Length: 329
Image 1 (cartoon, rainbow, N blue to C red):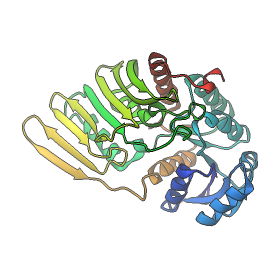
Image 2: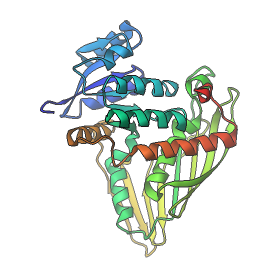
Image 3: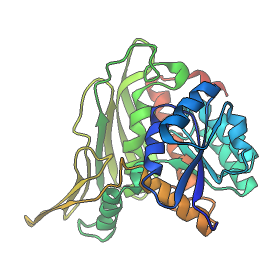
Image 4: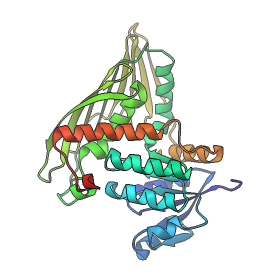
């Protein structure tokens, strides 16, 4: 590509707006088109973000010849079908987390991407933040010895009614898929593949989990302790520990602005890390790098790991009795 990468956004909700804002912070990226199921909604989004082309259907965006890659920002249960639509139209895809509703759907769309030889990635934006990248470098350098434990939490008090998407089973509601995916992904990032997961939860009136605690055993050694909640506001910290000390990514770890390295000899060092815009720019840069390098997946967020994490989520959902209408799809 000899031109800035031309993005299309499929969906016009809050996350789509955050992503559109982030695109303005990436010099090598251009927001070319947006799509909604209603033309008026697409046009309103287009006015707010100066988008040249506004489509009244997802299919029209997928078929747009002026698009290099599509970001999918729809509710969780729509992800699998939306990804298939774009891949079948020959478009590379960045899909918002959770990638799909369950591992079966993930395997299906990953197989399609590989068959089509097209780029596909889960939008796990936190993995690409400078603070998380630096924390990973520090842990891999051996500064705390071999990492043996990860502790991560993500919780906030959600003042929403039962019909809000966060609590609606039809829209993939629940803390585990919406928030728990972050601690789960971080644990696997620092300690490697998950061998087994054990979860307990409190389900709300709509049948979805409003808070879930889970522990992980990692195939290469080590344990993780994780928590997610819509009922309480937690510190939202990430701590990786080894025999020589710990690396702490302070509140909220989803922005990774501050890292503290505390060693057992008493040495403590705190780093303040940069963040471009609202943070989504860093995953956008990774997609651009992969596309220009001809890669079909990111080595930082590989597809096999995305599928494996959904296997863990499926296992935990079975343990806490959380089922969705999409489980039959």
